[in-house]
Length: 386
Image (cartoon, rainbow, N blue to C red; front, side, top):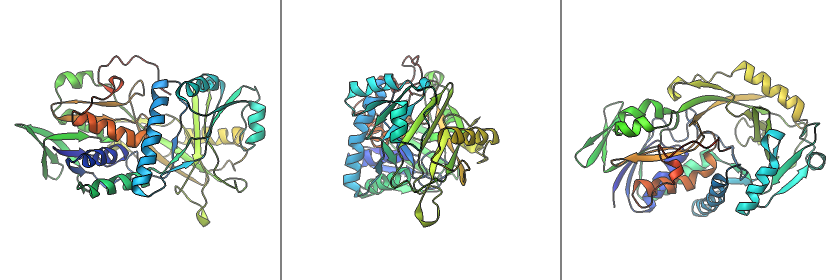
């Protein structure tokens, strides 16, 4: 068995640490602040788990990830996924094509006309132009913070150490081992290192000892400071609203029950609504300001008035989060010389967390290579995976 340092305790770092520790490896996790903190991409209790992808590769990955979530829930004794179902609408979203992919991977679904969908879900307005709406009932909401806590607890149960307040400055190779050097000068040594630093990765990438050839081929990473808004329901929904994705022309809007995020008195929450990649690019997580973009707020409020009659179109809370995007929205799991970089987000990675932990752990330990799709320089010419 080997010794590992995992840099980052968000969803992917926590999942990787758990998967490595349960395989008998000695694992130390270094987290710059606290696990799933609000400066990263894994905080909060509301992330969409959906199967509807135009790309069968990712749709099948969701099927596989759902099994991993059930195993994680069984081992942790916690409910981490709330089943709500999900709706996909808008001509640019192409619900019929998504339905064909779901049929291919064996996921239960219905393709409805807009009028039929509006009768079933009157809280949504699916557009005056008709069109089709896709419904798949096994979709839901992932509690990201609870998942991070559960995976780190299971990792600790297997002997892993989780160190907080330990931002990393660099990784140095010394003989057959690596020295992970902290901003404060403290050092951890291990045979192998996994860097799962999310939006901090652009600042770290050049200083972790990767070969120049790999760095040159690495896809450019664009960190986005995204905006999200919580709208109150007009009436008691009597149960969770479905999640939804609605694509109009070039704008993709998504929504989901807000969970504990911005909970109202009595523990109720509203509907969390956001525009995918509707924020602004920043250099890295270090440049995050937390300031809402007024133009983005105006667009989402207008969308709520037009398309969500079931909410009061005035947000009672708003927040920012981070996406770390590759040009094709594919994930990155690759490395060299005992260092593995895991950057599986691009705004759609949370739903895969326990599966990604297994993929990264297997790649880092040379048990099984990551899918070619996730390798640097693997001919990333496909259109965006959404």
